[in-house]
Length: 94
Image 1 (cartoon, one colour):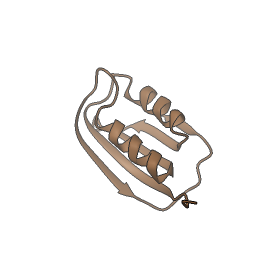
Image 2 (image 1 turned 30 degrees about the horizontal axis):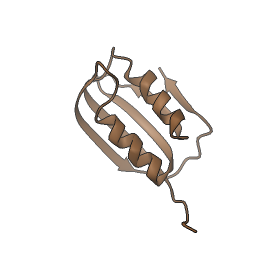
Image 3 (image 1 turned 45 degrees about the vertical axis):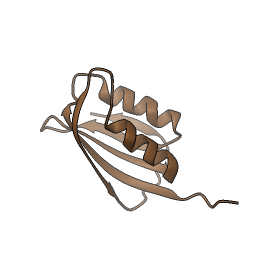
Image 4 (image 1 turned 120 degrees about the horizontal axis):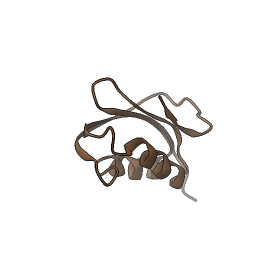
């Protein structure tokens, strides 16, 4: 039986990602993939997500970040593995 590996990633998404329902859609995708963490807008116009979960689902979420919501125009995604926190839910933060 394959051992499940859990990962924690900090992800910064740049481009036209604010005002296009990016955070709402990121939360929906995270829920679909059973991920925990949060997503929020940054002052420079980018979006930041901290996502935790099974390695395979984290990889799917990072792939989704390159596409984003329907109106988003993503130009860059930077994902960095970080220490596991143990979030209980996936929230949209202000």
